[in-house]
Length: 248
Image (cartoon, rainbow, N blue to C red):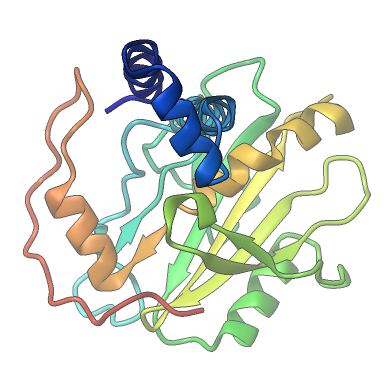
């Protein structure tokens, strides 16, 4: 039941039951106004979550076909990620930059980020994977930020290692190791994006990161997800047995 419906019912009950309800509320130390405030707070939280959900893409990213015999690459069914709304979910090669990451470009001129780069591999250690990715991005000397925890609001907290410096245009780089996979997600600011605009996007980036799933968990998400209205259903995949909750 929606919170506002609960409040209406409580008010109706109070009007009909009168002093007995107020006495009972006093005895348990809870007033109608306390309950209403709690319901209002819950409604605000639900509205906030709805806004975050709208701020990321309706569908997850596509992934390059896995080459036969490649034991390090991930297949489409092994990665699930929803970037910011306004970012294409169709992968493309990074072009002249020759970066070892797949590119997902912005489709909205006003977006504070020009693209998202994503890379994932199975065999490298996280340290080796981070070193290679940061070197390719020209950030070998960038110190790490404090570890970032996201996903609490979804009931699925997860940690990312985070790199970003104060240079204009510096990428926001996130690393995670999970399900024997290493992943790098890179949000690159658009030219002219202000520090204030980028700061405002951080809660949405965190929500976007929390959609990430790898290995069997990604397989399960893709296979059971209902396509957004107006989109074609994703190809069906065989759901691998889950190995339990994700770990950092």
